[in-house]
Image 1 (tube, helix red, strand yellow):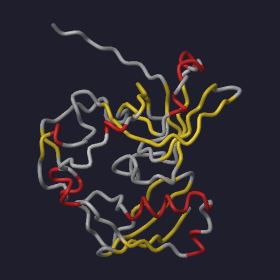
Image 2 (tube, one colour; image 1 turned 180 degrees about the horizontal axis):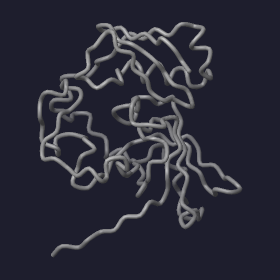
Image 3 (cartoon, one colour; image 1 turned 180 degrees about the vertical axis):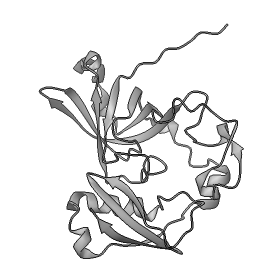
Image 4 (cartoon, one colour; image 1 turned 120 degrees about the vertical axis):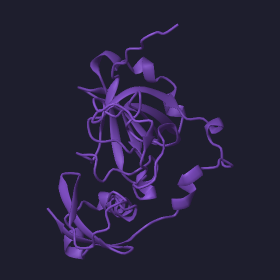
Length: 226
């Protein structure tokens, strides 16, 4: 028997990422950056969050809203494999899925009371674009952790990082509270992995700034911050 499940957002995320480019590839990779979960008016009852402050981490179930109309593919090209090897979609975290849903684990920083928005959850480590719809929240528990887990092809690129250089004059444009997060994002190499043009200048939005950079080998240099 088939039952159609209709989902509706219970909340949206507020983050420093205005577009997909530059977002960490997984949650938890950049824990110094904070985001906020803002509930839709219907779900702003403080009773719905009773007991959540006793947990340290949270699962966010959210929607790939930018890809919802593009359909799915049984195989995809994972960026960390250079974009030239195909894997089954269910062996990846590709956004091009039969149901475009994402899953992220984040740290709860605080649960605040806003006079207009009601309860707002401040979290660290989210990998969501600003405005992403959230469909559910579930507390993270120790049983969710499996240190012995085998990570398939993802193990091949574990520990990959770039050496990041940002001239002090440019770095001073970024609020100090966001600087560590920016370094972390850049060190993870936000480029599509199949692009290796050392002359190309890349750019992405970050907290109201445009970060311009180039990559030569394993060295990333920020050339401008607008």
